[in-house]
Each structure stands twice: as structure tokens, then as C-alpha cells.
Length: 356
Ligand code: DP6
Image (cartoon, rainbow, N blue to C red; front, side, top):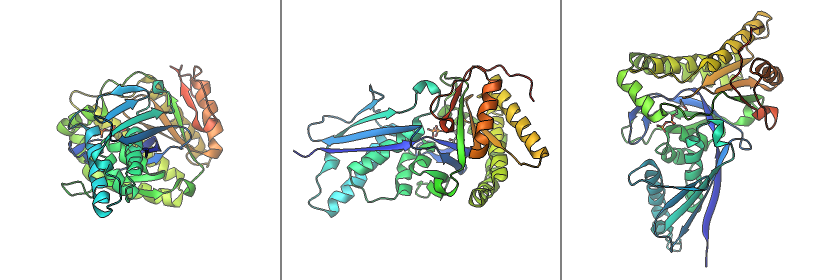
């Protein structure tokens, strides 16, 4: 008897231009375009296996070995339904194609990074889920087309369908057909670029991205300024910086956009605080490192960015990485490195010392 099963993985991505706000909460259409770097496949990824079988009585899902409910009309159910619709098209064109769209699916997903690392897994999780079902169903679709489906699982997931530097173009249409991810440059274009993840706290975040961003849409005037007058120019400028491998511009924009995202969170009513004192000390450290480096004529060495939590991601070029790892370890002595330096997680409360 034939076994219909497929496995796919997708890495985590970290935004340089942040997605924060939806204009349509059901279709997950954003209020602004965003741009991210997809991390290395080897280090932080979700791997998902999907199986379709005539004997299955309902669609079921396991995350890291624990069964989770697939809520009717929820994001997971929407993604599965969209992919089954595309499978029906395949079956309509090919009379010999097995009628997998009529079978239920069992889906099992694992993250290869510790859940305790405090890193959001919804982006890699939904991207891997969509990729594995697309493979199971042998769908003749592009990654951008799949990103349109992953977007409806979690907005940021659409960017994890590509490696390297990825833009999520917000689109203008009400049906979301022009809101998908595109590759800006592959990782091989700028292989010297690395991301250092500093786990400041592995506590579950207080305000989820989904809830937080809608409160911002409803209450923040600063968000309106950001989406109209700031992000469009930043998207153009950072794409040019990536194409030209201009780290100074890339880093400047990345830090400005992280700052503005957290300013917009603060401008929300009631305000949302994602960074803590250690996050702010890491910013001070990077600012001082860059100030000294620019003064010495060497340009910017590192760019910090923070998502909806206190953990820092530091972008740096390979030749500066060792110095940044050492500096982080010196000022945050409880830091703990594992894996190789290029995928280091620095964990600990840290004692912010005097800056050099
Ligand atoms: C701060 O994609 O997790 O990481 O679409 O509601 O699932 P939903 O939100 P999500 O939000 C990510 C927000 C962010 C910025 C970013 O990744 O662009």
C-alpha cells in the first residue's frame, strides 16, 4: 500500500524592517512591507512531516511531540484548507493522481532549537508546515505562492520560505493576492553576514505579537507616521544596501527600525514594553563599539535588533564576530555559548559593566 508522506524544514528569520500591524486580521495583510534575514538551515529551524492516509479520521497536529488542537476556522486549519484546494486542482488535471485532497492529514513538527531559548517559532513552524504539505501534494507552485499561504498562518512565516535576504511586499489588493515574500538576495550573495542571538530571557513574552500589534494599530499615532512616511523609503534603502553589500547602511537602518518599532510599542495605549534593562545595556554596548570603530575610521561593526521580547539579535560581518562575542561575554558574564561562534546564543541576566 502506498505511503503518502513528506518532510520539509524551514529556518527562523529575523526582521531588519519590522512587520507590526495588520490591515486585515483574517487574511493577515500587513500595514507595511518588511524585510528579514533567514538564519542558517543548520541552526534554528522547524522540521515538519505530513502524512495523508485514507484511514485517518481527522486532521491532527503534534508540536514537539505534544498534540495540539487544530481549531476550526483557525490559522492552522486555514493553511491546510488552502493547500488541499491546490491539491484538488492537481487532481482535476491528472486523472491518475491519488485523491489525497479527500484524505485527512497527520502533521508532526519539531524545532531543533531549545524552546527555552525564547525565540519565536511560529515563523519557521508555519513555513515548514506549508512546505511539507506542498511537497506531499506535489504542488507545482513557487515559494512566493506558498508564502501567500504561510502568511495566513503567521505573517512573519511568509519570509521563511526563502533563505538569505527576503522582503515581504505588503501589496494593495483586498484579497491578499499581491501580499507575499520575494527574495532580495540569496545568502551566497553576502556570506560574511552573521546573526548572533543573545538570549536575555527565556520567559514567555507578556503581550503576544498578534495582540500587541492590533492594539498599536488601534491606538498609536506614531504607527501612522511610520507606515506612511518611514518604512517605504527604508525598504528601498536597505534593499540597495544589501545589493551593494554596504554594511554601514544596512546596520544603521536595522537599528533605526528596531528603535522605531519599540517606540511604536511604547506609543500604544496601554504601552507595551518588550525590552528590559539587559536589552538596553546591550544596545549601549553596541552603540559604544560602533562609536569607537567609526571614530577610528573603521565603520560600523554591529547592528542590534529586537523583536517582541527582550532577546537581542546582533548582525555583524564574520571578521568582527569574534570581537563581538568576546565583548558580549565580558559584559554579560553569565552568558553561555553553545554550538559554534556563528550560532552562539548568549544567555544570562548579565551585569552591565562600565563601557570601554
Ligand atoms: C516583531 O508574525 O508573530 O517579529 O502575524 O500575528 O502571527 P502574526 O505575528 P508575527 O509577528 C512578528 C512581529 C515581529 C516583527 C517581524 O518579524 O517582522
